[in-house]
Length: 314
Image 1 (cartoon, rainbow, N blue to C red):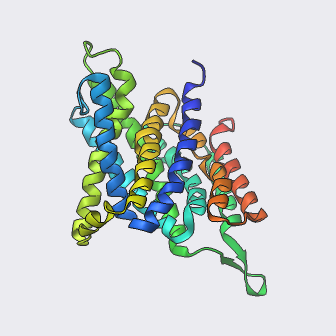
Image 2 (image 1 turned 180 degrees about the vertical axis):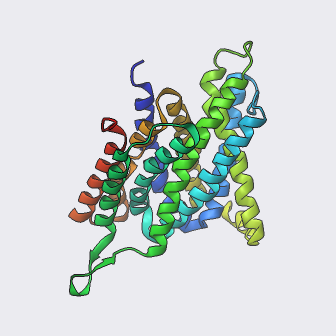
């Protein structure tokens, strides 16, 4: 099927839009690390059940040491660092602006792909990244006294959003490396449908490592008792359940599937449409007005993302 990787990437963008809306709710209700631990733990259970039904093993069978190494690195960068930044970013500036800052993920993915995979990176990338940054600046800067510019959002939230983009972009490339090792590790006599389930098995590895990482952080901060209180909050657990299904189970797994069929840069570009898709649902849910400046900022940022990967190589 033509453009299957691109189609999957668009589905991921829609899935992450739903995830962002519920993650915003869950983060405010439970705290960022508690919400992350619960969603990743539930993701492990869902993925184990899915693998058991499809390949007969409730665990990532055939995964070798290299597969675990690269996917674990991906989990630490993408989940523990990236999602910790993202969920705390939601607490500071909300999912709408958090997802806008996530448009930095494709440039970070391209740079990581150049450094780790030897993918081409041309001067056009610097221009495209500049366009993306201009779009973000339009959205987060406002006019201060004496015609000076000032941040219209808290600096902490902006830095957390940048960290989230870095975590997602680099984490995606590390996941692609892990998937390549996983593919090579599958024996010739493995079930034919094992290849289609690799993204889900890979996501399970990442979810296991991510859960462990967040639990260690919570233990260091002596926050583990919050987990017991969280599971008693039915409303919050409903948000966690929905963001688990649309996040790690569907969104992340399909994002890994997307990079099997197209390069990491194009996949990241299409997945970065979430800031556009989230604008109106977020405004409706939170009864917020969307300013023209924000629409222009999102449009310019998305133009930068598109230019980053779609301009002819020069």
